[in-house]
Amino acid sequence: MIGMANVEDALELGQGAQFWAYISPQNQTSKYVTKWAVKIEQTDGNWAGSITSDNPQKELKTPKLSGVFKVTVTASGPKFAEKTLSPEPYSKPDIGCNSNCAGMVGIVANEDGSDATYWTVWDAVCKPI
Image (cartoon, rainbow, N blue to C red; front, side, top):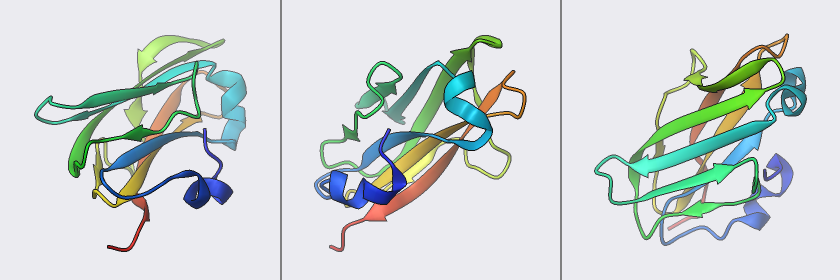
């Protein structure tokens, strides 16, 4: 998981939409969400990639694609079995990203750690074209 402070330095933007996962420090998420996967796929099914708790620093980069991508987040922890997470009420369930930008999917546990949700940030960081 890339920290917010160094994301611009870590990503080489351009030539395709990129994505990264962020585990929120809110509600001690890393304590309560111990296994997770973020799958991002092109709506027509020609491209897909995943970032998991086994390799949380992984960045996904599409081959010159942009548009809206389907997001599926699964997670489990000490207080809940593996499940597909719902997006936060204020967040869109899928993510849009231009070919010169990177988008972010964040995971956050609820207050007692018995569940979690996710949120998306479309075009979180962009390189001028």
